[in-house]
Amino acid sequence: MSKSFLKNTDAVSPVVGVMLMLVVTVIIAAVVSAYSSGMIVTTQKVPTGSFDCKISNDGSWSNSGFSLSVLSVSEPIQTKDVKLTTSWVTTNKDKPTERISDTVATIGLQHQLEGKYSNDGNSYIDHYGTVKKLQSPLGYGPGVQNTTADFTKVTINEQNYGNYLLTAGTTLVAKPYGKDATTGGYGIAQDKRYEYTKGNKYDPKTIKTDEMGGILGSKWYNLRPGDTVNVRLTYMPTGSVLFEKDVIVE
Image (cartoon, rainbow, N blue to C red):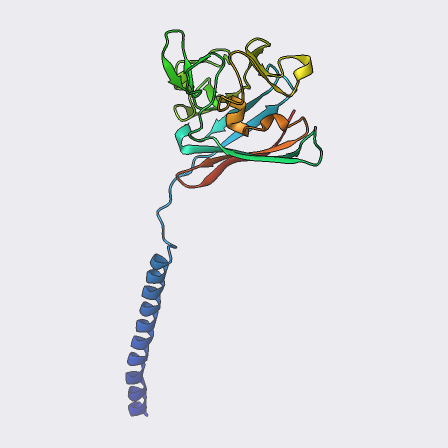
């Protein structure tokens, strides 16, 4: 009987060895498969934050605009790394059978500001005659150098989208062009509400766009209170969505 016992003991070792080899082979195959299929990747930290957005259009330039407020962020975010996209569909209020839509990605899109313009229609000339490029939406407050939350002041270069940070308290602003019946603008007269009016310094047919056009598209003025605009912030290094909201036009 002892011989039988010894014989059985000798038979265990090769079985265990084969099992171990199979386990190791399976583990190696799983690791190789994970690498080849891209399952193992280097993760990049994605900033987070909370934001709020407001869009208004009451038919006049003075009471219409776009603003996006940064309520909080996990860390300051470079605007050059964030794509702001808006999209919307509405019915032409003057032609109910006509549907109007627009989708705009604002990165790299320049707009007009009230003031004296260069011949190319894309530049702002300050009081010293210096031509400066503008990029909407303009930044105000924390995260923007040489400016405060005073939306009536423009420092131009530092406020260009792409040149400032998104941090708690930063506000992104766009306003339609408008001044008076002489210079032209948006809804400058009661009988011209919801219209751009040609003046001696502004003609929407010859000038590329203005701040609101830069954010919402060239036909943005067809939007009315109650319409919905989808607003999205995408962190481009990872493709992650920082903010998305269907904003009701006021």
